[in-house]
Length: 143
Image (cartoon, rainbow, N blue to C red; front, side, top):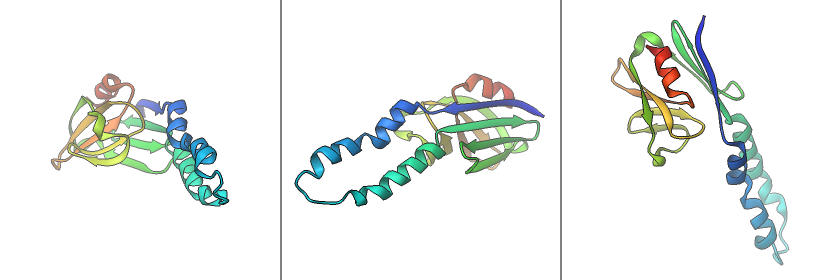
C-alpha cells in the first residue's frame, strides 16, 4: 500500500536551454568558414537528449516497508528499506551540490531540480538526500 507518491519534474524550459543552448552558437559562429561537418555534434546532442528525456522527473513512492525512487524511464531505481531509516528531515541544499545522482558531504543524493530535499539518516551511519518539491509531505510520510 502506497502511503505517499509524488513526482518532481525539472524546469523543462531551463533544462532545454542549458542542454541545447550551445548549439546555435556553435552553428552560427564556430563553423563559419571552417568548412567542417556537423557530424561531430551528433553524438553530444544525442547523449544530451537521452539524459534530458531520461532524467526529467523523479518519482518517490513511500510504502509501509520501503522508499522507492525511479527516474522518468524507470531506470535507474533505488529502494531503501524503511527499517533502515533512523530519521528524516527537510534539508535545503547548498547550490554547489547540483542535481542528479551524486555523492555529497551528506551522503548520496538523487534530485532533478531545486534545492529542497529530505535527508534520511540511515542505520549504517550514512545519509541519503531525496530531491522533492514537497519536503514537508515526504518527511511526514516517513515518520
